[in-house]
Every structure is written in C-alpha cells, then in structure tokens.
Amino acid sequence: MAPEHHPGTGAGRIVLILLAGLFLVAFLLVPLAVVFSEAFAKGGAAYLDALGQPDARAAIGLTLLVAAIAVPLNTVFGLVAAWCIAKFEFPGKSLLTTVIDLPFSVSPVISGMVYVLMFGLQGYFGPFLAAHGIKIVFALPGLILATVFVTFPFVARQLIPLMQQQGTGEEEAAIVLGASGWQVFRRVTLPNIRWGLLYGVLLCNARAMGEFGAVSVVSGHIRGLTDTMPLYIEALYNGYDAVGAFTVASLLAMLALVTLVLKAFLEMNYRDDLTLAAAQVSRH
Amino acid sequence: MSIAATEERGSWGGRQHTAIPGFPLTLGITLCYLTAIILLPLAALFLKSTGLGFGGFARTLLDPRTIAAFRVSFGIALAAALINAVFGLLVAWVLERYRFPGRRLIDGLVDLPFALPTAVAGISLATLYSDNGWIGGLLAPFGIDIAYTPNGILVALVFIGLPFVVRTVQPIIADLEHEAEEAARTLGATRLQIFARIVLPALLPAVLTGMALAFARGVGEYGSVIFIAGNMPGLSEIVPLLIVIKLEQFDYAGASAIGVAMLLLSFLILLAINFTQVWMRRRYGA
Figure (tube, each protein chain N blue to C red):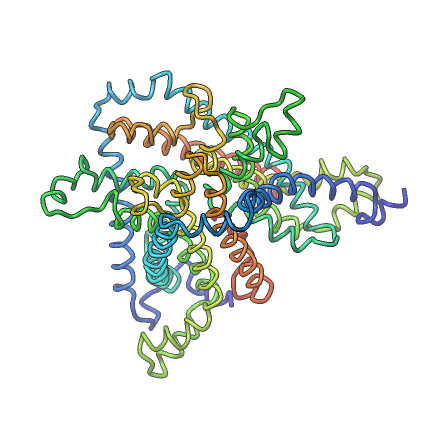
C-alpha cells in the first residue's frame, strides 16, 4: 500500500479534487459565467444600450448614493463600538456584542419590514410623518435605513477581535506620554487597525450595494426614483428583458469580483493584521 | 499580544485601571445607535404582532398556506445545509490538504456567494437551471426539473450556504494534528477507519457550526430564491415571500406575526444546535 505513506499522491486524492472541482464549477463558476454570457447575448451594442437607459443610470446613481451614506455611517459607528467593546471591561459586554451581530441572523425581508412598521403610512410614526410631509418609507431615507440595518455588523465585528487582540498597552503608553484621546486614536490605534478596517469596509460596501430583500420591502419600486440596481434588475428580469437585467447584473458581478480580489489580496499580505484565526463567518 | 488581553480579562472594574479615555462617550453612542437602528425597530415588530391578539396570531400561523411556507423554508434549508455539510467538508479538505494548480483561485472563489448580490445569483441560477439553460438543459431529457420547482430553492440555498461550512471547517483542518492520523496508519487502520474514527469526530463540531450558519441564512434567504422558486403557494412559496405578500396587502399584523414566529423558530433551532455542539465537544473532547 505504497500510496498510503504519501497521502497526497494516491488515486483518492485525484478523485476528491475532481469531485470538489466539479461541485465548485457547477455551483460557483458557471453561475458567474452565465451573468456575462447573458449580458452580451445580443452583442456589445445592446449591452451599452442597456447601460445607457435613463432608468439604469438612475438605479446606478441611487445605489452609489445609498452606499455612500450607509457605509461611512457604519464605519464610524463600527469604530466607536469596537473602541468601547475592545478597550474597556464592563458588565453586559457579551450581550452588546450579540446585539451587534443580530442583523446577520434576521431575514433581510424582516430587516426592511421593521422600518415599514415604524415609518410606513400605517406604522407607529406614520401619521406624524405624513402630517409633517416627511417621507421615509418608499423614499431614500428608508433605503438608507434598511441598508444600514443589514450592513451594521461588518465593520464592528471585524474590528472587535482585532482590537481585543492588540490590547491597550500602546494606547496607555501614549496617554501617559501626554497624548489626547483623539491623538491616540489617530496616531496609535488607527495605524494598527487600518487593514482590518479596510477589510470590514470592503465587505460592508459589497453588501450595501448588493442588498436586495431589505431594500425591496421599503423601496416601493418606483422606477427611476427608488429602484436601486438589484431592484432594477428584478424589474427588468420580470419584464422579460433578460439582456437588460444581466447587463446591470454584470456590473454588480464585477463589483463582487473586485471585492473578492481585494479581499484575497488583504488576506495574503496582511494576514496577521486581520485576525483571520477564526473564520470570518463563524461567530463565537 | 495576548498578555494585555489576559491581564484585563476577569476584572469587571478593569476600566478603572486603564488610562484610556472615551468609555462613556463610545458606550453612549453605541447604545443609542443600536437602539435606534436595531432594537426599536425589532421591538416594533413584536409589538405589531401582538395587535392580532392570541387568537389572531394563532389563526395566522395555523393557516395552511403559512404552515406550508414554513415547511418549505425550514425543510429545504435543512436539506441544503446537509448537502453543504458533505460538499463543504470535501471542498475544505481538498483546499487545506492538497496542493494543485489553481488552488488559490478556487479558495478565493469560495466566497463568491458572500460577495455576489443575491438578486444577481437569483436570475443567474434561474436561467442556468431552467429547461433551456446550460445545466437545466442537460437534466431536462431525464425528466429532472430544477427551476420553478422546490428543487430550484434547494439549488439556490446550496449556493448561498456553501461558504459558511467551508470557512468554518477550513481552519480546523489546518490545525488538525497529523500525528494521530499517522499513528493510526502505522497501527494498521484503513483510510476509511482513519476518517471515521479520527478526522470526522474532530471536525464534526465545526461542520455542525457551519451547517447551523448556512441553515439560519437559508431560512431567511429571499433574493436568490424567489427568481428560481416558481413561488407556488403551498408548494414552493418561502416564508420571506409570504411576509412580502402580506405587506403588499397591507396586512402588517399578519406579516409581523409570521416574522416573529420565524425569528423565534430559527433562534430555537440555533440554540438546539449549540447545545448539541457542546455535548459533542464533551463527548469527543474536540
């Protein structure tokens, strides 16, 4: 049984690799390829034409706008929450960490629905808002709120274990030497966590731009006005405009690929600065 | 680097010892933000569902259409989690233990379901697995329909859940000690015996964790499913879609009741899996 002494060379190895490869090709690679193949099914001109539609431009603009507001908000609050949880000891800390993770275990549909219940016309604050002419649901603020809810944990939970691991020694030394709190954050903490922060922002942004379920509930689907890119894709697809749907989808697929490449780059070069010991997906 | 962390651990009043400023400010902002963005809205969900009264709550949940949706969502999410347990373990094993060309590329690609927007995945899978799609066309002559049947939901949930198992199991495989396997081999164990007696017990808690995460995600998944599901009430209608339909009919209380039931049910299942995991850790000492 010669191969058994070299576990990496047997026939079993080939079979396992092929089996895993086949599974990944069918479930990951082919779906990705279909997006681009369908987008260019009628040639480059049709592709450009679909991108040039005013509604498509409006959807792209709206998606960028929502992400441009939601991502910085969650970055700032992720930093604040991580500072509070990682640098101090206080009762109820693990409960707080659990609450931060909560959006990950809530269905996206529910994440959107809660804002309809709060701010919709028949929601708790609906009559008040209507009386003052403020529109939250079926308008931009609702889209932003739903996106913020869904993407809140990304930056915080990337930073919390990282900052806990780094401890408080360097910051304390800086304080003793006379630095102010803000100086400590800017000169000591931020340089230490910058790659982890970038990593969290990257994932947060990918989700913010791609979110569908939560945004779908609060959008109202007014084309050219409250349709983000994923919602516009749905509208086109259900209207039997496959080329249009896949054209817009191809932009989001490229965003996903860029995100994956940057993520792999960060993991390869700054592994120690990211705390990858526990897989990103598992919460402990 | 862990020295500072250990020093702090276990001392409740630890923050008095530290000179670092900003505790009241950051805690205050965090609590306000979490309350406004997450806790109050979720409280509104529970409050709205109580508006039905117990009778109305029960009537909404015991409606045959609701029961069927729960069976579809939870049943298929479980099936997808089981498939992912097998193939996720396989993929993680191959990626960690073997070196072959393209390994890094595949390793990066495993995260695609995390990065690809669900609506994009949804229309792509629906096209791919329909009767004239690349894969659906291969299966159609054998009478196997995927898209617009419950099978389609299964495919979408396997896609969405795969990275959870792979990424949870991978680091455990990397940490696995070769010595035990080698000792078993020198003592004459077959490969199957080594896998079943040594490798699998060590990996099982991680596989279960990954499964639980994939399952929880699958139960709530909306975007990738609705395009491929066919959405036939009673047959291929998932719970999140039923919530959306109720909302569109302005039945907010009914939608909240189903939402609350879904939250509680997935919470209970995660709890049960957590307990099993603790039990297994104790049993296998992994």
